[in-house]
Length: 201
Image 1: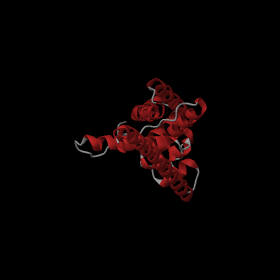
Image 2: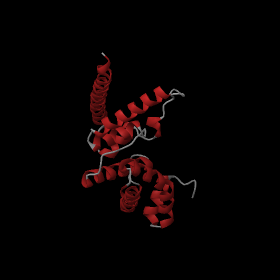
Image 3: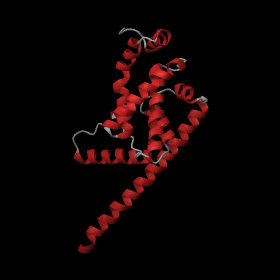
Image 4: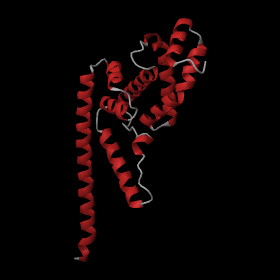
């Protein structure tokens, strides 16, 4: 069963309703779904609960999988949407931390550069949190999980041009929030620096 594709496992499960096929899908994706849920909630217990809910939801939805995208992409879409709904309905803090790919910077051993890189990553994260959850989701699908424009379009019932337009609009807003936040921190730093130097003039 190791060499059976995800899509074939879905077809076999839908046709036979044998749990072994679903269990194989669960084994392949449980950890990945959990990590994605954890990135939304920052709470391991809550992430476990949501992961469990997503797989229960998946059992019901498998028969609606039409192979318009890869199974993994389809499952990630369900995960994103469910987590986003949870953020809205439970009014959780909208914290989606960057996966390693967003934070990994080759900064050598220079502590000053490391601190600056950390500040930039935090500023980008704060800017991301200012976007609505659906815009966060689309940006993360494209730039963090490298899901294609075509797959994002299929998963969201949109045209590819609509996805490109939404991504551009979201990127523009993200850039604006990032620059506004950076300017604010610069002004605060200048004010602190001036207040420290003032007595010595």
